[in-house]
Image 1 (tube, rainbow, N blue to C red):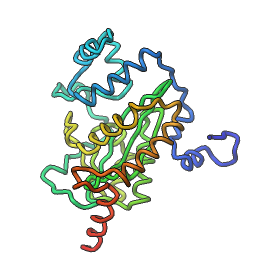
Image 2: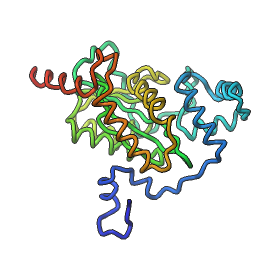
Image 3: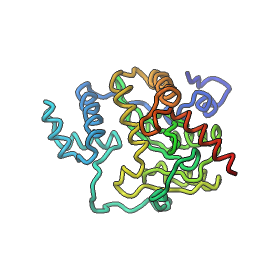
Length: 276
């Protein structure tokens, strides 16, 4: 894939292959077979009950026949980038370079494409490790506009997904994400402000504020990820491309009156353009 001896810079090779540059320099830490199984179960349980912390997750795993200590469960959850959704003391200060933005979607009737985009990151287990997936989605149509895989939670792969979505589909009025540092960094938010896009951030511990991405993750995990074992990131990328293309073009949604995301996106996009 990447040829470090090629005259074309590695940065340009990564752009062509649509992979994060940070993953080229990252040496993955192999997980034990037992930990890979635990991580897969934690991911599945978290999708069903995002309110479980390490204590509750430990109990849920015990019911499934897996005896594991709470500290180890907490370590695996942190590695996966997930935490329980519940009210808790604010133990850390905001990053000094990250501005706090309000949640702008409350009470809005979002029915037209490119009115609101949203984004989130999820964990993807593989045969001998793991990676992360970021997706940019149009809120009204549920269409996945762009996505990227990465070995690390470095924010560069989120920036690449955002830039691709803007290049292919223009700009939305509002962009909504959670409070993850990848989305509140100056590098990410400056792209939004430079394109006159309003920034909306979910409330603290309010996963429902970004509900359509959360629903997509659940569909994606149960209908794709949990049915397979990806041998590598390139293997995952190939299968994810097929799944997301089908999700956009062929999978009807009850919430869209049995229409596909592509159908709703392009029909409401034309309506928006005609109204201008």
